[in-house]
Length: 336
Image 1 (cartoon, rainbow, N blue to C red):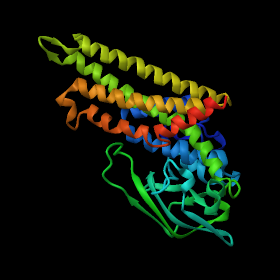
Image 2 (image 1 turned 90 degrees about the vertical axis):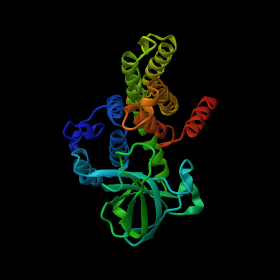
Image 3 (image 1 turned 180 degrees about the horizontal axis):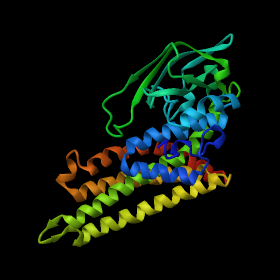
Protein backbone atom coordinates (compact mmCIF):
# COMPACT_ATOMS: atom_id res chain seq x y z
CA UNK A 1 0.00 0.00 0.00
CA UNK A 2 2.84 2.36 0.81
CA UNK A 3 4.47 1.66 -2.55
CA UNK A 4 1.20 2.71 -4.21
CA UNK A 5 1.18 5.95 -2.24
CA UNK A 6 -1.92 4.98 -0.28
CA UNK A 7 -0.29 5.45 3.14
CA UNK A 8 0.39 9.07 2.24
CA UNK A 9 -3.12 10.03 1.20
CA UNK A 10 -4.12 13.33 2.75
CA UNK A 11 -0.52 14.08 3.80
CA UNK A 12 1.46 16.90 2.21
CA UNK A 13 4.20 15.88 -0.20
CA UNK A 14 6.71 17.80 1.92
CA UNK A 15 6.41 14.98 4.48
CA UNK A 16 6.47 12.14 1.94
CA UNK A 17 2.72 12.17 1.43
CA UNK A 18 0.64 11.85 -1.70
CA UNK A 19 -1.77 14.71 -1.09
CA UNK A 20 -5.27 13.75 -2.16
CA UNK A 21 -8.80 14.12 -0.85
CA UNK A 22 -11.20 12.55 1.61
CA UNK A 23 -13.15 11.12 -1.33
CA UNK A 24 -10.04 9.32 -2.54
CA UNK A 25 -9.40 8.04 0.98
CA UNK A 26 -12.96 6.71 1.14
CA UNK A 27 -12.49 4.85 -2.14
CA UNK A 28 -9.31 3.22 -0.81
CA UNK A 29 -10.96 2.20 2.47
CA UNK A 30 -13.92 0.71 0.59
CA UNK A 31 -11.81 -1.23 -1.90
CA UNK A 32 -9.50 -2.60 0.79
CA UNK A 33 -12.48 -3.77 2.86
CA UNK A 34 -14.03 -5.32 -0.22
CA UNK A 35 -11.00 -7.61 -0.32
CA UNK A 36 -10.16 -7.90 3.39
CA UNK A 37 -11.77 -5.98 6.23
CA UNK A 38 -8.84 -6.66 8.56
CA UNK A 39 -6.39 -5.10 6.12
CA UNK A 40 -8.67 -2.10 5.78
CA UNK A 41 -8.71 -1.77 9.58
CA UNK A 42 -4.90 -1.79 9.72
CA UNK A 43 -4.86 0.94 7.07
CA UNK A 44 -7.50 3.20 8.62
CA UNK A 45 -5.96 3.02 12.11
CA UNK A 46 -2.52 3.81 10.70
CA UNK A 47 -3.39 6.44 8.12
CA UNK A 48 -6.67 8.06 9.14
CA UNK A 49 -6.05 8.07 12.89
CA UNK A 50 -2.35 8.00 13.80
CA UNK A 51 -0.77 9.73 10.79
CA UNK A 52 -3.60 12.21 10.38
CA UNK A 53 -3.49 13.11 14.07
CA UNK A 54 0.14 14.14 13.67
CA UNK A 55 -0.65 15.84 10.37
CA UNK A 56 -3.55 17.82 11.84
CA UNK A 57 -2.24 18.65 15.31
CA UNK A 58 1.49 17.93 15.43
CA UNK A 59 4.23 20.54 15.36
CA UNK A 60 6.47 21.03 12.35
CA UNK A 61 9.13 18.98 14.16
CA UNK A 62 6.62 16.16 14.75
CA UNK A 63 5.65 16.08 11.09
CA UNK A 64 9.21 16.02 9.86
CA UNK A 65 10.22 13.36 12.38
CA UNK A 66 7.32 10.91 12.07
CA UNK A 67 5.32 11.38 8.87
CA UNK A 68 7.96 10.39 6.26
CA UNK A 69 8.38 6.96 7.85
CA UNK A 70 4.64 6.52 8.27
CA UNK A 71 3.80 7.49 4.70
CA UNK A 72 6.53 5.16 3.45
CA UNK A 73 5.11 2.25 5.43
CA UNK A 74 8.32 1.91 7.42
CA UNK A 75 6.64 2.91 10.70
CA UNK A 76 3.17 1.68 11.63
CA UNK A 77 0.90 3.93 13.70
CA UNK A 78 -1.66 3.14 16.39
CA UNK A 79 -4.27 5.28 18.13
CA UNK A 80 -4.65 4.52 21.85
CA UNK A 81 -7.92 5.99 23.10
CA UNK A 82 -10.24 3.26 24.40
CA UNK A 83 -9.94 1.98 27.97
CA UNK A 84 -11.69 -0.80 29.92
CA UNK A 85 -14.05 1.78 31.42
CA UNK A 86 -14.01 4.37 28.64
CA UNK A 87 -15.26 3.38 25.22
CA UNK A 88 -18.19 5.42 23.95
CA UNK A 89 -17.71 7.59 27.04
CA UNK A 90 -14.29 8.86 26.00
CA UNK A 91 -14.50 11.51 28.71
CA UNK A 92 -14.16 8.68 31.26
CA UNK A 93 -10.50 8.09 30.44
CA UNK A 94 -8.45 7.28 33.54
CA UNK A 95 -4.92 6.97 32.13
CA UNK A 96 -2.98 9.83 33.70
CA UNK A 97 -0.16 12.05 32.50
CA UNK A 98 1.69 13.81 35.32
CA UNK A 99 4.20 16.52 34.48
CA UNK A 100 7.67 15.84 35.87
CA UNK A 101 10.26 18.29 34.58
CA UNK A 102 10.67 17.84 30.84
CA UNK A 103 8.56 14.66 30.78
CA UNK A 104 5.03 13.45 31.28
CA UNK A 105 4.76 10.26 33.33
CA UNK A 106 2.02 7.98 32.00
CA UNK A 107 0.16 5.45 34.14
CA UNK A 108 -2.90 3.46 33.15
CA UNK A 109 -4.10 1.12 30.43
CA UNK A 110 -5.75 1.04 27.03
CA UNK A 111 -7.70 -1.76 25.37
CA UNK A 112 -8.84 -2.82 21.87
CA UNK A 113 -5.98 -0.88 20.27
CA UNK A 114 -5.45 -1.73 16.59
CA UNK A 115 -1.86 -2.10 15.33
CA UNK A 116 -0.29 -1.65 18.78
CA UNK A 117 1.85 -4.81 18.50
CA UNK A 118 3.46 -3.56 15.29
CA UNK A 119 3.36 0.16 16.04
CA UNK A 120 6.46 2.31 16.05
CA UNK A 121 4.29 5.31 16.95
CA UNK A 122 1.27 5.45 19.26
CA UNK A 123 -1.00 8.44 19.74
CA UNK A 124 -2.13 8.36 23.37
CA UNK A 125 -4.85 10.38 25.05
CA UNK A 126 -4.34 10.84 28.81
CA UNK A 127 -5.78 12.91 31.62
CA UNK A 128 -3.84 15.71 33.28
CA UNK A 129 -6.61 16.21 35.84
CA UNK A 130 -9.44 13.68 36.22
CA UNK A 131 -11.59 16.28 37.98
CA UNK A 132 -11.80 18.21 34.72
CA UNK A 133 -13.24 15.30 32.71
CA UNK A 134 -12.85 15.79 28.96
CA UNK A 135 -11.42 19.28 29.57
CA UNK A 136 -8.34 17.80 31.24
CA UNK A 137 -6.83 15.72 28.42
CA UNK A 138 -3.52 15.86 26.61
CA UNK A 139 -2.56 14.12 23.34
CA UNK A 140 0.95 12.60 23.25
CA UNK A 141 3.13 10.83 20.70
CA UNK A 142 4.66 7.75 22.30
CA UNK A 143 7.45 5.89 20.53
CA UNK A 144 6.91 2.15 20.26
CA UNK A 145 9.94 1.09 22.31
CA UNK A 146 9.41 3.54 25.20
CA UNK A 147 10.32 1.96 28.57
CA UNK A 148 7.37 1.49 30.89
CA UNK A 149 4.95 0.62 28.09
CA UNK A 150 3.83 -3.01 27.73
CA UNK A 151 1.74 -4.29 24.81
CA UNK A 152 -0.18 -7.57 24.93
CA UNK A 153 -2.03 -9.03 21.94
CA UNK A 154 -5.70 -9.85 22.53
CA UNK A 155 -7.08 -13.09 21.10
CA UNK A 156 -10.51 -14.51 20.30
CA UNK A 157 -11.88 -11.82 18.01
CA UNK A 158 -15.06 -12.62 16.12
CA UNK A 159 -13.84 -10.91 12.95
CA UNK A 160 -11.17 -8.66 11.37
CA UNK A 161 -8.64 -11.28 12.44
CA UNK A 162 -5.96 -10.10 10.02
CA UNK A 163 -5.41 -7.02 12.19
CA UNK A 164 -3.90 -7.08 15.67
CA UNK A 165 -5.92 -5.84 18.62
CA UNK A 166 -4.05 -5.18 21.85
CA UNK A 167 -3.97 -4.07 25.45
CA UNK A 168 -1.47 -1.33 26.24
CA UNK A 169 -0.20 -0.76 29.79
CA UNK A 170 1.70 2.28 31.07
CA UNK A 171 3.75 1.97 34.25
CA UNK A 172 5.65 5.19 34.97
CA UNK A 173 6.18 5.54 31.22
CA UNK A 174 8.09 8.76 30.54
CA UNK A 175 7.23 10.77 27.42
CA UNK A 176 9.02 14.03 26.56
CA UNK A 177 6.91 17.18 26.84
CA UNK A 178 8.07 17.96 23.29
CA UNK A 179 5.94 14.99 22.15
CA UNK A 180 2.74 16.78 23.13
CA UNK A 181 0.43 17.73 20.28
CA UNK A 182 -1.36 21.01 20.83
CA UNK A 183 -1.59 22.66 24.21
CA UNK A 184 -2.30 20.99 27.50
CA UNK A 185 -6.03 20.38 28.08
CA UNK A 186 -6.76 20.48 24.32
CA UNK A 187 -6.41 16.74 23.76
CA UNK A 188 -10.09 15.88 23.72
CA UNK A 189 -11.00 18.54 21.16
CA UNK A 190 -8.15 17.45 18.91
CA UNK A 191 -9.21 13.81 19.23
CA UNK A 192 -12.81 14.56 18.28
CA UNK A 193 -11.66 16.45 15.20
CA UNK A 194 -9.61 13.46 14.06
CA UNK A 195 -12.37 10.95 14.83
CA UNK A 196 -14.99 12.98 12.99
CA UNK A 197 -12.88 12.93 9.83
CA UNK A 198 -11.88 9.28 10.22
CA UNK A 199 -15.52 8.26 10.59
CA UNK A 200 -15.94 8.79 6.85
CA UNK A 201 -13.32 6.09 6.27
CA UNK A 202 -15.04 3.61 8.57
CA UNK A 203 -18.35 4.24 6.78
CA UNK A 204 -16.56 3.56 3.50
CA UNK A 205 -15.11 0.39 4.99
CA UNK A 206 -18.64 -0.77 5.81
CA UNK A 207 -19.65 -0.14 2.20
CA UNK A 208 -16.74 -2.31 1.08
CA UNK A 209 -17.90 -5.19 3.29
CA UNK A 210 -21.45 -4.83 1.97
CA UNK A 211 -20.26 -4.68 -1.64
CA UNK A 212 -18.23 -7.87 -1.24
CA UNK A 213 -21.15 -9.70 0.38
CA UNK A 214 -23.52 -8.53 -2.35
CA UNK A 215 -21.13 -9.70 -5.09
CA UNK A 216 -20.75 -13.11 -3.45
CA UNK A 217 -24.53 -13.46 -3.20
CA UNK A 218 -25.09 -12.61 -6.85
CA UNK A 219 -22.35 -14.99 -8.00
CA UNK A 220 -23.62 -17.89 -5.92
CA UNK A 221 -27.28 -17.30 -6.86
CA UNK A 222 -26.37 -17.61 -10.55
CA UNK A 223 -24.55 -20.92 -9.95
CA UNK A 224 -26.65 -22.73 -7.36
CA UNK A 225 -29.41 -24.88 -8.77
CA UNK A 226 -32.55 -26.01 -6.97
CA UNK A 227 -35.83 -27.40 -8.25
CA UNK A 228 -34.43 -27.57 -11.76
CA UNK A 229 -33.28 -23.96 -12.08
CA UNK A 230 -30.78 -21.51 -10.61
CA UNK A 231 -31.93 -19.84 -7.44
CA UNK A 232 -31.38 -16.47 -9.15
CA UNK A 233 -34.56 -17.24 -11.09
CA UNK A 234 -36.60 -17.38 -7.90
CA UNK A 235 -38.45 -14.20 -6.99
CA UNK A 236 -37.61 -14.43 -3.30
CA UNK A 237 -33.89 -14.40 -4.09
CA UNK A 238 -34.31 -11.69 -6.73
CA UNK A 239 -35.98 -9.38 -4.24
CA UNK A 240 -33.25 -9.95 -1.67
CA UNK A 241 -30.62 -9.07 -4.24
CA UNK A 242 -32.57 -6.01 -5.37
CA UNK A 243 -32.69 -4.71 -1.79
CA UNK A 244 -28.99 -5.40 -1.32
CA UNK A 245 -28.01 -3.58 -4.52
CA UNK A 246 -30.13 -0.55 -3.62
CA UNK A 247 -28.93 -0.26 -0.03
CA UNK A 248 -25.24 -0.65 -0.90
CA UNK A 249 -25.50 2.11 -3.47
CA UNK A 250 -27.39 4.37 -1.05
CA UNK A 251 -24.72 3.81 1.62
CA UNK A 252 -21.96 4.64 -0.86
CA UNK A 253 -23.68 7.90 -1.81
CA UNK A 254 -23.97 8.92 1.85
CA UNK A 255 -20.25 8.28 2.29
CA UNK A 256 -19.37 10.31 -0.78
CA UNK A 257 -21.59 13.17 0.37
CA UNK A 258 -19.80 13.33 3.73
CA UNK A 259 -16.38 13.11 2.04
CA UNK A 260 -17.28 15.85 -0.43
CA UNK A 261 -18.33 18.18 2.38
CA UNK A 262 -15.12 17.42 4.27
CA UNK A 263 -13.03 18.16 1.18
CA UNK A 264 -14.89 21.44 0.67
CA UNK A 265 -14.22 22.58 4.24
CA UNK A 266 -17.94 22.60 5.03
CA UNK A 267 -19.73 21.17 8.10
CA UNK A 268 -19.76 17.40 7.69
CA UNK A 269 -20.09 15.83 11.14
CA UNK A 270 -23.82 15.06 10.87
CA UNK A 271 -23.39 13.61 7.40
CA UNK A 272 -20.39 11.51 8.49
CA UNK A 273 -22.42 10.03 11.35
CA UNK A 274 -25.35 9.37 9.01
CA UNK A 275 -23.01 7.60 6.63
CA UNK A 276 -21.48 5.42 9.35
CA UNK A 277 -24.84 4.61 10.95
CA UNK A 278 -26.45 3.60 7.68
CA UNK A 279 -23.47 1.95 6.00
CA UNK A 280 -22.64 -0.22 9.02
CA UNK A 281 -26.25 -1.39 9.23
CA UNK A 282 -26.21 -2.17 5.50
CA UNK A 283 -22.96 -4.13 5.95
CA UNK A 284 -24.49 -6.31 8.66
CA UNK A 285 -27.78 -6.84 6.83
CA UNK A 286 -26.15 -7.51 3.46
CA UNK A 287 -23.72 -10.02 4.95
CA UNK A 288 -26.67 -11.71 6.66
CA UNK A 289 -28.65 -11.94 3.41
CA UNK A 290 -25.61 -13.18 1.51
CA UNK A 291 -25.09 -15.97 4.01
CA UNK A 292 -28.80 -16.84 3.83
CA UNK A 293 -28.57 -17.14 0.06
CA UNK A 294 -25.57 -19.45 0.43
CA UNK A 295 -27.41 -21.61 2.94
CA UNK A 296 -25.40 -24.26 4.74
CA UNK A 297 -22.40 -23.74 2.46
CA UNK A 298 -22.09 -20.16 3.70
CA UNK A 299 -22.22 -21.13 7.36
CA UNK A 300 -18.91 -22.97 7.21
CA UNK A 301 -15.39 -21.55 7.12
CA UNK A 302 -13.56 -20.81 4.88
CA UNK A 303 -16.44 -19.46 2.78
CA UNK A 304 -16.07 -15.76 1.99
CA UNK A 305 -19.54 -14.91 3.28
CA UNK A 306 -18.80 -16.56 6.62
CA UNK A 307 -15.84 -14.22 7.05
CA UNK A 308 -17.80 -11.18 5.87
CA UNK A 309 -20.61 -12.04 8.29
CA UNK A 310 -18.13 -11.96 11.18
CA UNK A 311 -16.32 -8.87 9.92
CA UNK A 312 -19.41 -6.75 9.30
CA UNK A 313 -20.48 -6.41 12.94
CA UNK A 314 -17.45 -4.43 14.06
CA UNK A 315 -18.43 -1.52 11.81
CA UNK A 316 -21.42 -0.92 14.10
CA UNK A 317 -19.14 -0.79 17.14
CA UNK A 318 -15.75 0.86 16.68
CA UNK A 319 -15.03 4.55 16.10
CA UNK A 320 -18.39 5.39 17.63
CA UNK A 321 -21.17 2.84 18.08
CA UNK A 322 -24.42 3.17 16.15
CA UNK A 323 -26.01 4.53 19.31
CA UNK A 324 -23.39 7.29 19.51
CA UNK A 325 -23.99 8.13 15.85
CA UNK A 326 -27.69 8.56 16.56
CA UNK A 327 -26.84 10.92 19.42
CA UNK A 328 -24.62 13.01 17.13
CA UNK A 329 -27.20 13.11 14.36
CA UNK A 330 -30.11 14.06 16.61
CA UNK A 331 -28.04 16.70 18.39
CA UNK A 332 -27.18 18.32 15.08
CA UNK A 333 -30.70 18.06 13.66
CA UNK A 334 -32.37 19.47 16.78
CA UNK A 335 -29.94 22.40 16.99
CA UNK A 336 -30.60 23.54 13.43
